[in-house]
Image (tube, rainbow, N blue to C red; front, side, top):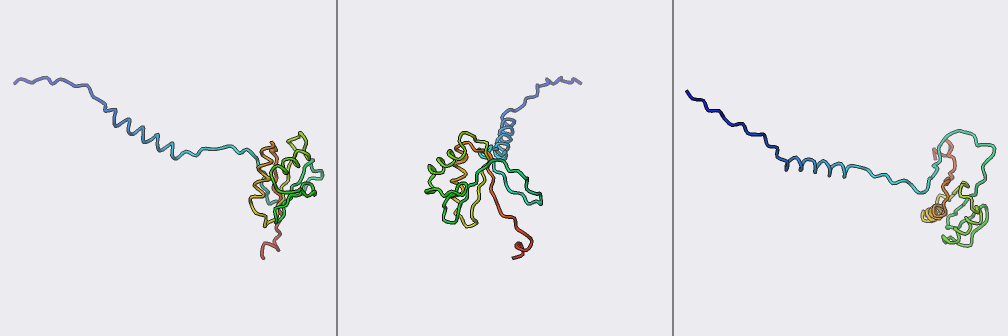
Length: 144
């Protein structure tokens, strides 16, 4: 009986299917990844707490927007609501100091674009400390 010795072939790896799998994984991770864009303007959102107000407030200026979109900077009415007017008023109130906190107080019925315009002008001028003021709701008002 004569046994033939079979020649052993080197295993061959098919790279085409491996490349397909790696490509599909790459597409999956690219699609499922969230891309974080850092905010240009930091907004301090109000928190509901019973912490008392500090006795001494740092120097700041307050921008009030009424229902009609009229702006008031430190209780002084501005001529109009144009961004150029806001820019000039901010520059006059703050000078070169961009670390001054800006408190934005808007009426509940103020059209949203007036608030966005004010925030945009503050961001363009380099103000990074913007607070949006709200009224505290008591338990009596919450039940209405």
